[in-house]
Structures are given as structure tokens and as C-alpha cells.
Length: 580
Image (cartoon, rainbow, N blue to C red; front, side, top):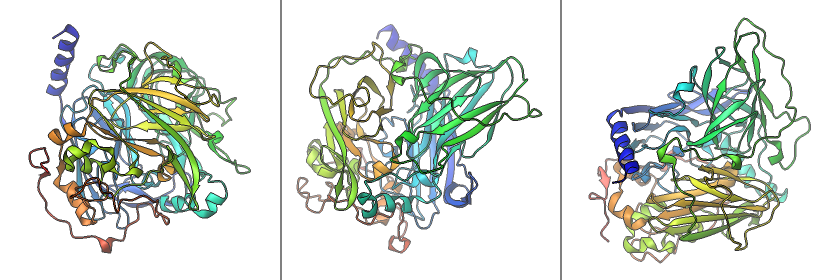
């Protein structure tokens, strides 16, 4: 074993030895709140909103027992950015790795101890079913590094800042509007947010002391547009992007697309003479049209002295920001290290756009719109034997790609739309090999050279309008991994694909817990077979879902249609393999 591998193994043992088990009991229910002055129902956790942040140390085991008390909606939770190695069933996206959690059911997400070794920094959790994130079911997830390379500089502690757009209407109504014939006839514009929130409110105070350096976690928890953050009179130094350490880069302003995160160092002034404005703005360039009088600005305050006056609110002088392609992966964390992938084993080209399909504005990838299948794709991978290597069994409209173990995969996304799109990959971070400029044209087979010797790695990246991006990752995490635009309305319109990574290995190593099966059975959802639920002829897709729902209603469900909660096997299959 080489010296570096010995160090990695040694640190793994060190982190595991210190690991704790963090157990949370979450009851989901409705609560009426007014974070921007307008009351509306939200999904609360234990009658609390904002929902709780999760704080772990590297290597900790996380167990969350979720009880769905919503009554009229299903639920799910995705832990954004976590790889979920060896436990793909805990990833959370409905129709990919689980069934929705029905009202009255209990459902456990259990991360094995040491499963987040090598993942530290700024993450978040959020609903991953039918737009429910827009009803407020989301929050920060921070994994503390036991050997933070910047620990000696962090003298003031840590601060978490969430930014995001906010709607007064509930998700089912917004989805009905977006997928309606009237909206398609109008060109398919996305719903325009009513306001922006900082830490799920407005005019929020962040207390600091003079002469200190703070580690600030910044997360865009919104549904649609990017957000700007500018702390008046202060620069910040980026040290982390989506959980990957970067070489320090000092900037005056941050821009975060939906679902992106940064970890930054903020050094305060030497005295407490003044308090300072925290200026935020929604990215209105992403709107089809800006309503007259629309105000995209929202604010917080950096408070040095509570006795002193608050600064006067003002507008941004301009909206210029740094290019995240200028960020370089740091050498400070051994887990983040990977040479630039120069040899590609598998290239996947995704041509994305939008079309009017049967009076709905639908997104397409390679001329197919994503439609959830009858059987969750993970369950298909585990129950179709050798046929799991055949993409046909997952259904055409899951837009499936089966990937071999340890292949270097190159994803090319050609964006034929006139807007920018933040694409997110579950189960991995990717190297951003090259991003063409806005309007710069499309990939047509030309040779690609990495823009950096240590390219930016992250799990969510903006693909510019009428342009393309090239991403690479190593397929070393067997599982079913969605890749999708993180604009929630585009997910509902079908802008997703399914990567099925090493299903043969999955069948030997992974299983479905009994309470996960129970969630399916209560709703009459099949748990075995191909995308259509066929367990006899896996390549017969008769009955598979091929058309979008013409009357989408979000996560709403009629509770009278549910079967009783049951007790099923502790897990399936019993020996971690399927013999069909």
C-alpha cells in the first residue's frame, strides 16, 4: 500500500472511531406562516418552520425517522450532494430510488456509520417529489470536517445563510399552472416568485464580533432562479464549492444557481463602529418577462453592535460576479483529489430543449420527455437479474443510461434553450472539463481539452443558454442516479435522465428496507419487475408510463385510496441479491 493510501486508510479509521449516531424523529405537518408578510401553508417539521438544519461530523451515522402527517400529500427527502455509497435506497428521489411516503406512514432514512467519509462542508436536504420543495420542506445540512485545513483561521465560528425565491401559491397550484394549456399557449413561462428570502425570512440579523473570521455556509434553497449575495463593505474568500475544497479565491459578491452552495471565509472589521447591509437579489434575467414594479431585492444585516442604527437599504451597483470556472480544486483534502480525466470510456450526449407536447410545455432530452415509471428504477435494477444491464427494462421515458463500473464517463449537455439551466448529478461530483460561453454554440464532436489542470468539481453547475458543457466523473458508486435541471418547474416538465450505474454490483450489495416496501404497497405501487411492473418478460414494456400526466396535482393524494400500514420483511432481498 502506498503512503497516500495508508494515510487515507488511517484517517478513515480515525474518523470512524470518533463517529456518533445522530437520530432525528421528524413529523411532517401543515403550518401557516408569513416569512415575507403574506400568510400561506408550509410543510413544517415537528410543527417548526423553518425546518431544522442538520449538523454532522464526518463519518457520523444519520438516522431520520419520518412520519407523514400531511394528510393529503405524499413526501420524500433527498440529501443533496451526499453520494450514499452502498445505500442508494436512502437517496430520496421518488420513482428513482423509492416510492413516495404516503400519509400515515413512517419511513426511515438510515445512513451507515462512516458512509460520509470524505464528504465535508455545505450540503442541504429537500423534498424530492412533485414540487413539494416549493412548500418549504428543505433545510441546511452541514458536515463538519474533523481536520478542517482552515480551522486555525476560523476564530469567530460558523454562520449559515440560505437564499432563495419564494411563492405565495402552493406547489400543486403552481404545477397545474405551469403545465396548463393556457401557459403552453403563452410560450411556457415559469411561475415568477413573489419574493426572495434570506434564512427563510427578510431583514434577518447576523451577529458578529470585530476582528474575527467566520466560516459562512451559503446555500441557494430556491425553486427557480439564481441569487446574488453581497455583504456591503466586506469581501469573502471562497474555500469550498458544493462540498469540495477549492484554492482560496477572494470575491466581492457571490452568485448561486438553484441548489448550489459555497463555503466562504468572512473576516470582520477591526471595530464595531457600524453595522452593514447584506444585499440579496433574485436573478431576473431568468424571467421570461419582468412584471411592472417587480422588486427582486431582499436584505439582511451584519450586526456588529445592536445599539447602533441599521444601514439604509440600497440597490446593487451592478450584478457582475466571478466566473466559478476560475475556481481550482484544492490539494488540502486528500478525498477531493483526482487527476483530470483525460481518457473517456463512455460518452453520453444530452440534447435538451422544450416543446409543446399535447398542449403542455414539456422539456425533452434527446427528444424524449422524462415520465416517472410504475416501478422505481432502483427496484427494477435489483429485480431483473441479468436484464438489469439492458436499458430497455427501465422504460424509454426514464431516459436511461446503463454505465459500467469504474468507467470514466463524459456527459455533454447541449442546451438548445434560450435560458440558463443548473444541472445536478446525484451520487457524484463531476469535473467541469469545459463550459462554452453563453450563445457559443453546441458540441458537435470536436476534441475537448480541460480548461484547468485541476478542474472545478461540484455537483450542480450552470449550463449557459444556446451553449454546451462537458462534465466527467468516475463511475465508482453503484446505484441509480438522477441527473436533472434543478429548476423545480423543469423537473416537473421532464428535464431529467436516469443513470443506472453497475446494476450487477447493486444486486450483490444493496437492498430495500421493509418500511420502504410498505410505502409502495400501501399505494399499490409494484416493487419488482421492469418499468411496467412486468416480472415475467423484462423486455415487454406494455403498460409502462410514456405520457405525462395531463392533470398534474403535485404530491396530492386521496388518503382513502391507501391500504393499511403493514409489517413486511426487514429488508429485501434477504441476502442482498436477487435470483430470478
